[in-house]
Length: 141
Image 1 (cartoon, helix red, strand yellow):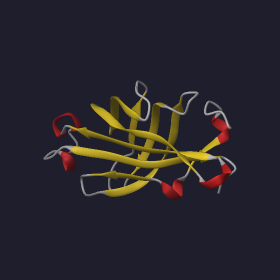
Image 2: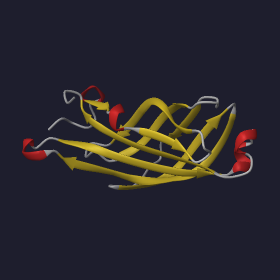
Image 3: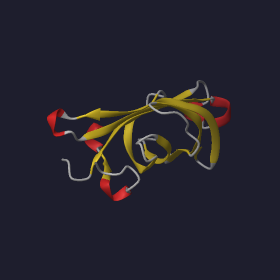
Image 4: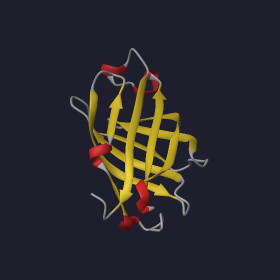
């Protein structure tokens, strides 16, 4: 078994990843990192998202709790402003066939208040940010 605490042993599977916003901007590219505990639990993340027609977003949390169901607080930085919201989701270990190897499936969501974001295109409604991704052993394609 590859230890979850070795950052060189894992990679974000971009072919199985998507970041979406409820604002109609659709999905975009992202990069960043996830903080995993020894058993594969998700402890936190820092993600930079590039979306069409928007400044770069930084979404982060360092205080996630739980095992397969995760909860905590998160912060979104947008155009020099910060907003805070609860984040929830899951981080599940998914076995792969008979090989005994596995990967992690991560789904996260947070709803940010439009008054706190104060970005003109998002002023009228809350913004929900969702992330779907997989973390696979570095040797898997």
